Length: 218
Image 1 (cartoon, one colour):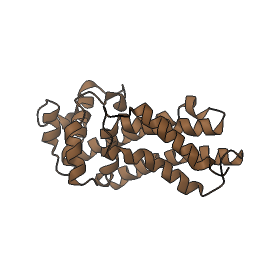
Image 2: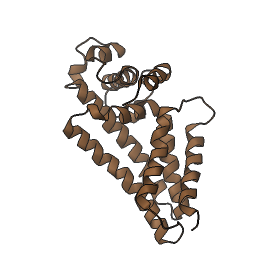
Image 3: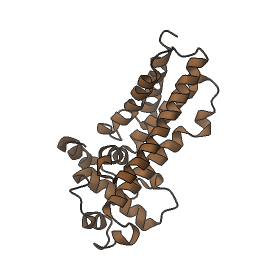
């Protein structure tokens, strides 16, 4: 869970309503998307347990009971945020335009860049996805764990393939993959839009770092 300092920082730059709509997908109606936007702001500012369903509904400009028309519980809202957030990030690293790149180093660089850029662009949603997982039910938590393992598979396959081709140095693949994933995930603690680095700039920089991790001594 994030400490008070982390949440206070989020309060200053939580996204306005509608700004995270691309994460949710076009299959949701306007009201559910607005409720998810409000929930992200509330969870980022107060934390899941300190947020009430009234807070979420009010933040969306709706009546106190409006949330229950679209979601059965506050936990279901959190699950929707974390599921859709993970699925959105997974889609960018599994995009054939990235995974079908034939050259191993270029492919790994592109995968890491896409992962990092997504987390920078959607850092408030990503922060909720990372910091509030413990508030999910056991069943929902396991669903998210399955999604998270898919990220590991994408990164691991890219490193193993490059190693088999002799492009990457042989080493502890699992540790290297964890390090690469951690680089992207950790930036949600401190990244702010409008700073010196755009999401794309940061993605390119981290992508190059990832390639250096596995090519040193190859």
